[in-house]
Length: 333
Image (cartoon, rainbow, N blue to C red):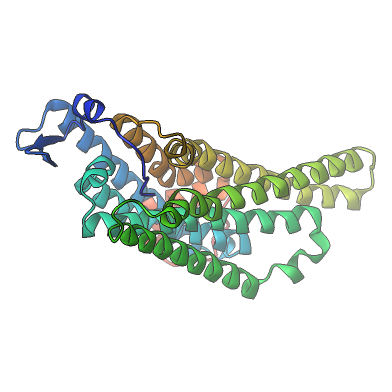
């Protein structure tokens, strides 16, 4: 996301990015990087590498192993692709064109970076929104789940998520380009960048997901009471399936929770601080931006921690076992 925020000139000089310097009122990369700058770039490059590696594992696992060919995992695959592109595209662009440097001089590459940033972050949250819908039918309406959530529906969900995200990203960038034609910032473009954009790409989907997961929680609670009050063998079999679905829902709810912890501070900052004409320290913007982007690195670790079959798949991929024979039908435990 490219925030439109206010800075005090004195604050910007005292809190300048460690890898940049001001030369004749130009904000440029320093020719003599400090130790902090070098360590920062090493850390961010490691973040990018881990993000790419982790999400590649998820993508290969879902595509290769037949056991993982489920509607929910296809949505996880789409989420992993978005996170992978963040590691491949957004991270390098953010290293070369930091948020703070783009706030001073927004050139073509800053606009490209902002476009991918907005589109991919919106894609992630819309995929999470689709996953919550999938979990709703799996837990709340299990008898109709296979009818309502089939491969065709999943493909439509994925296409809509990516299509809407691309439109939002393009719209926000066009609004930013229109600002250059105004002597002062255009009110409508400010609203699109700082209000309408965040509402459509973050706040509205989050509210929908929270409502869905609350409904799932209440239904799952009733199911637990029902299971505890029955002793029929057939019900026990159904209880096992219900338990698996609730575990999957819990894991994906944690994915949502981590997403909110990473992204909410950034969206709150770019939405409300400009409205009260308050200045934002450069260090704060940079920190919140990288906290948000680090979410793309965390999801594979969540899958590996909670899903035994993902752990098994990751071990087989990392060890190179899948290159030694055909293990597509392997039983992952």
